[in-house]
Length: 229
Image 1 (cartoon, rainbow, N blue to C red):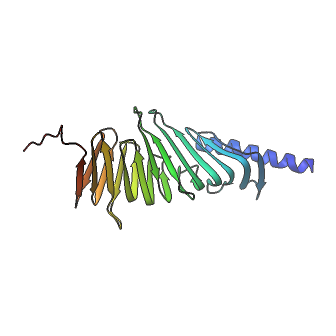
Image 2: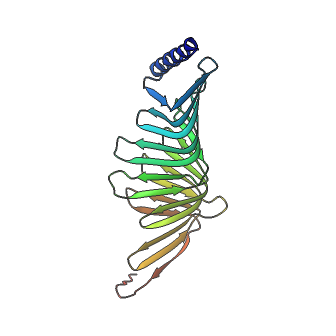
Image 3: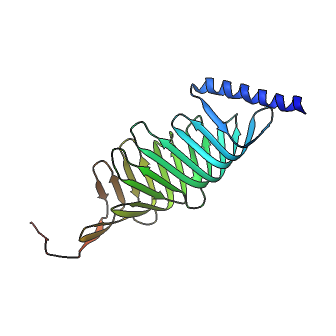
């Protein structure tokens, strides 16, 4: 029995060393319990499971790692944390996730997933809710699908889908079945707009609408209203 356990530990240690060398960046996968099968090709982690590589960290109740494909299946209280070099922080929560540690892409779903995005050089935090989330290049871009809601300190946006791009701090939505809708409020006024395409630019604090735009602005008070032609 002792000999068998030692063999498993040895296989896993070699696997970890070779894998890190191939990727030129160390990947750590840990958990309270570990079971290795198929000669080290599949590893199961249960209890405080975690995978770390570079600036990202994924935690969950349990994980399965497939060495041949570099895939990680995470289940139960999945949390994804990315600390970007520019100072922005991305957090994502869901009940399930599938992530490829080599291609740096994956999917999160279950229990109304949410992305919490702390924007670069800003106190603004954006909350993005959806039914499923697809991520590419380690959160360089994120696609949210179905029942999408974007909530910030100044308003909300609802859409069938949304694409978040970290490079230019933009969020793009387009009509699938329903037009994206923006609801914003500021001091004594609020606005509601719909369009086939809506872009939210965080750096410029601008909302751009394109194609079949419709909307309204409601003023609670007309005391300071100035109209120019």
